Every structure is written in C-alpha cells, then in structure tokens.
Image (tube, rainbow over all chains, first blue to last red; front, side, top):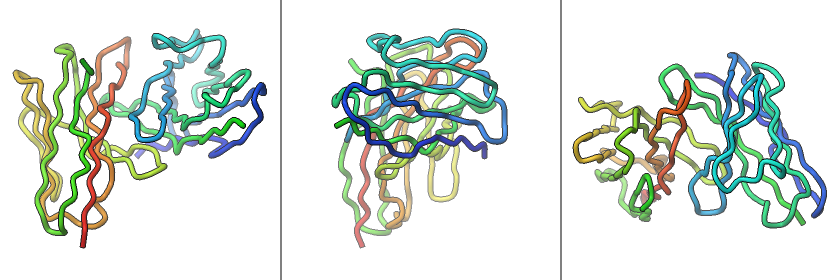
Length: 114
Length: 112
C-alpha cells in the first residue's frame, strides 16, 4: 500500500515556541493531504485539508493563524503549530487519499508542550 | 448527535470468540465506508472497506445497510492480536477527495 511518512515522530517544546511537522507521501503524489489531531482516548478530529498550490481549508473551530499549513509540493505538506501551549499537546497525524477514498496515514507525531 | 456513533466498549472476549461491532452514521450523503484498526499510540490502518453487498476478508466480515445508515464488523475466531481499537469511518464527498469522519472507536480486548 501507499506509504506516508511524518517527521518528527515525537517532539517536546517549551510553551510559546513553534513546532513544524512534515508529512510526505513516499511513493505517490498527493495534491491533497489531511491533518488530524487525536487526544488521549478520543477519536481523530480533522483539523484541515492541505491543498497543493492553494490555501488550506480549515475545519470549524481550528485557528488558521495558529496551525499554519503549507503544501509545498506534490509530496510534502507541513503543519506548523505556532506559539504552542500545553493544551496543544496531542497526537498529530496526516493522511493522503488513495484511489477509492480510503486514506493512508502517517505514523503520527506526538507533541508535548511544557 | 455525533456524525458517526459507535459503542466505545471495551469488549472483553476470550480467544476464539465471535464479536460484532455496530456503527451508525447520520449524514445520508456519505459516500463510502471503512473500518480502520488503531493500536495504542499508533496511526489508524485500513482494515477493510464496507459495501452494501457485504464483504469478507478472512475472519472479518463487514456489512453496510444504507437504508438504516448502519455499518457492522464481525470478527470470528478472535485472536490475541485482534486486541485494538476499531474505528468506523465514513467518507463524505467534499471536493475531489472527500473527507473522513471517524467514530470514537470500539476497544476490543481478547483474553487468553
């Protein structure tokens, strides 16, 4: 199946700093990628849709100025958490769609803000 | 009301048991349906797509009832390695690819 990678797999940062997470499709091109967040014992919540060559589409309640998304190429999307706070600590997962609307997920990035 | 609802469980079953998970969805415009499996602190992995005609993959059988907006997953002869959280997922068409809406997941614990 298709492979999606994420980097870093985990990161610890201080409150107020910014963190960038990369999502790459390794063996296919993805004009669209998705970013999710998952809190402990909760389901995945879609944050935004990343579109190559245009602005990202954010879900209701997600601050676009706080979660900056850049779809730099057909194989790379980045999510930057700006001015991170402890409540931003979560598991961030990206995905890219397959041919039949299924999605392939990256391994996730565990962010801890101290 | 949640867009995709599942019984969170946990379901604790002995090895060899048959277990069934149910899921309902509220958006009648939902286009496609999936079961994903998520292990603790890992990303979800596609288990199987779900079709109205029903589909089977080894010990796993999935069924979709569009009229009732109901999805099911049956696991026969449970193995210890089946212990995980099972996510019912619905794709709602949005743009060219749609977007996935996840249920909260049903936790399965298979005991020896």
